[in-house]
Image (cartoon, rainbow, N blue to C red; front, side, top):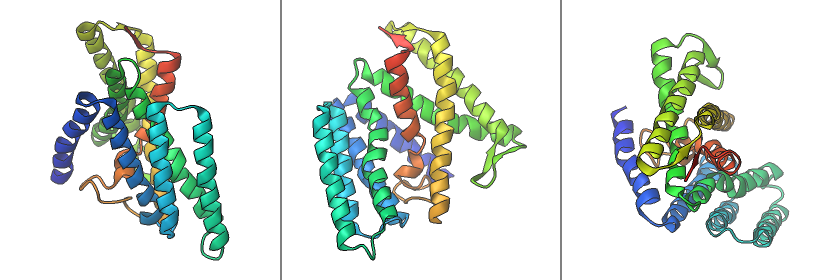
Length: 271
């Protein structure tokens, strides 16, 4: 627990420094690096694919997806890049069909395109107007539900939420996670209103809090299922006490694109 707290105490300020103090390209580089690590964790670390060339193709695809999220290039470039990626993967499968399964190819596509596109929402949030404030929204909706659920579960937890997937999660903890997220989201919105002159729709704030907490739990449980199917405890050990990138940012894969969609449809803060 001490290691976990120490890593969080050091890592969180560094993360916030990159996304808030540096230009948006720094966020793009950081997310791209996270996605490359995630590719390795899912394909090699979790054992879904042992062909390292496939992992390299997926890593390059992840970098390109993050670049496209940063620069917002026309869709034709994304389509062309995807075509090259698919051609490389299917070429590998044809060359080593006895060793490389179609399932491995599908996991490579998930690792190289889907996960980077989901995490790439952090980049797309950052490049929005007032993006520094909106990327923080994603972090609030990612971090608070986990902590709120943990403390509420420790204090009141009696009924298991999904004992097969995650034995320690409880219904009471989940409710505590939702309530704490709505409260912290309202506090953050109030800060934006009072300190930065944003116009706030507090009904939308509640919507963000409820949906964000649900999305955070969904991401956490989904990647827990993948770990169980792979027969591993953690995706990696890059972050001592936390595991790998996919262990720490599993919730972000769902929360970040949700925040992006909500901001584009029902923005809670307008300036």
